[in-house]
Image 1 (cartoon, rainbow, N blue to C red):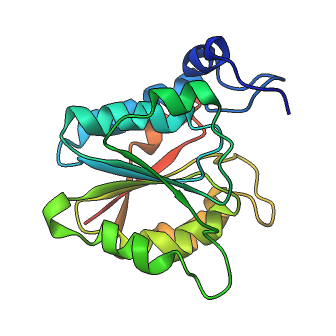
Image 2 (image 1 turned 90 degrees about the horizontal axis):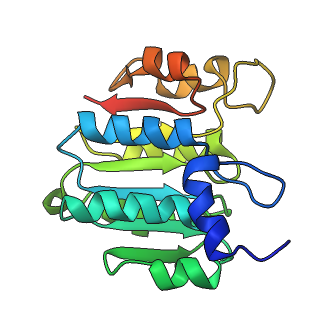
Length: 196
């Protein structure tokens, strides 16, 4: 893997995926900010799947503006030096395998998401097995919180993050779809739900 430079990190905010690095596209950044803007009760963000950490930097800025924190979790730290230098004081990187047997990350993340003093959180599932992340971690989100999943696809295949596979986990009950028409119109790979 090539080393991500400062120029690449800046470009990722606007360009998204290229052969040199993977990331979220400009439309996905816009959709994330759209959901954030619509939900002023959100102050803090938990990102599952840090990768190179550029998305976490954006989330950290959004959280800092509202006086919140940004916690990003991954099983390895591949953040380039430029991203590490830009890491804000309201941001925390946690090492951990989100899907390990015995769920060792469940208690610390439950404590974060369940902290009533911190208000409702935005949970972003963008690690390895997003369906399993939704199953394990979405129930920890308090009322008023929002869950977003990345890499939502229009195809219905086993193990893909698509409507048929996500619906049994997130539709009905305490969750309601949030801005799905906008996501479709913008061709975003994000989908969001709000906990009632």
